[in-house]
Length: 259
Length: 320
Ligand SMILES: Cc1cc2nc3c(=O)[nH]c(=O)nc-3n(C[C@H](O)[C@H](O)[C@H](O)COP(=O)(O)OP(=O)(O)OC[C@H]3O[C@@H](n4cnc5c(N)ncnc54)[C@H](O)[C@@H]3O)c2cc1C
Ligand SMILES: Nc1ncnc2c1ncn2[C@@H]1O[C@H](COP(=O)(O)O)[C@@H](O)[C@H]1O
Image: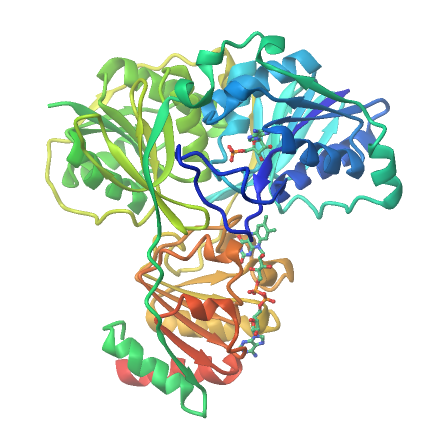
């Protein structure tokens, strides 16, 4: 079984995230890492591979030079090999464009099962897995908090707003998993050493047969007109509880007409 | 006038509030045409008409309940072909975003997710979004095709705007992909009788500081005294004290109520991502240095086990 895991390299959420002059996410000036939510995808891939007789895990990222760090981390967790799609013309690609590049890369790599995270921690759209499924023309089995694969069938549980659903589809399929799917493992020392010897291929747009005009900022089907830092909240009143804290808070809420 | 498609989120004909908010926003761009699918679709028409839907396109088939996402995409695609709308608005639920994305790709259109406001312009609808854990506000447009935009709950007021709301049958042919992912079982979420977390005017949340499932009764009592929904931090959810459906934050629900009360929550960036746009923020935390205090309009440094019950009593007394 060939498993492809989609991982994104994102600016650290606890750092000072901001926009570049062209209103794309600044990826040069801020420390990046493998999106924490994609660690769950790598973890589930490893568990599914453990259960299968003969499985191979390829991790794929679409991103700048530094995105290799995300691949290394996934390899040190236990993935077998990696593909880095990198091309200057990809700068500013939107979700629709990213799904095109991922779909082509996944097809080139060969796949039975694609596993993604629930959302990237920078864009937080949560749409790329559905878009990749649409492009590949295979079932989407997404936002799973529990997943397993047996005899060419993927099953899982999707906890929605109104109900918790049990899902089932035949492979090939695109899966995405949530952060409820199970803690991701830490890379072991052995894993980190082994990762250094694992193959990382680099593909550009021409390797994938994609025209530059279909991706990047120019090819995006959306345009950001402005980005402004949210004004800092005006400093509030802070009181220390000396036995009347609850009553003081009630007084504030009454003053704001909440009571 | 141009027509705007609004995807109706409903449960057996009961329309959920975010859809009515979409009708308010749709009217800024054109004349709303609602699309309601599945069991009870036709029953949505009365309330949609009250809020501005000129037409309500309906279609019911077993596929909508039996298979994931794609049948709904097929139906919306048919509606786009039939109406040629100026834009398509979809509520920003997890499913709504997936439906919208696939629709956008099929119709050769750009997609914007999680808008918190929408206005008309010469270049089409302009969406306001709150990004990077609500630390930036962006304004974006769709530059190709029919704009597909998903909108977060609480982004607009629900307004009465009576319109015809004439029910029309939508012709839908399901694609080969429609039956790819089977829903083999469904356990409806039990109702707590409290307001929906994402729709509530007041949210009362508890975190690791609540220190045990049994103490969440204090958070619930405060919530009930205010008619509020109950939220929880991921730490409280991971500890098993409260269900994941109540988690507020990046990987939980994103809320934007009039009032947010955080008790025993430190205010990590991933939690802030889900509540930072609340109008008024109040916190109780025994650590004066907790980052949540950077956000508050009013904060009490103290033990929530003392402060919260006292607050609840005081509210109950004042309400008489
Ligand atoms: C990818 C990712 C996604 C995440 N998504 C989310 C998310 O959706 N939602 C979310 O909430 N978190 C999320 N997190 C986790 C987040 O980083 C924090 O770990 C979490 O929010 C901490 O929860 P907390 O504030 O309850 O706990 P803590 O940070 O441990 O804070 C507990 C607070 O309670 C106070 N306290 C303790 N006892 C008392 C008392 N008796 N009275 C008053 N105060 C007391 C303490 O002073 C402290 O400030 C995510 C993390 C990652 C990496
Ligand atoms: N540039 C990328 N490279 C690889 N995978 C990606 C990329 N962008 C998104 N993904 C995958 O798609 C998921 C959802 O992303 P998004 O729709 O951007 O929130 C992520 O968790 C990843 O698994």
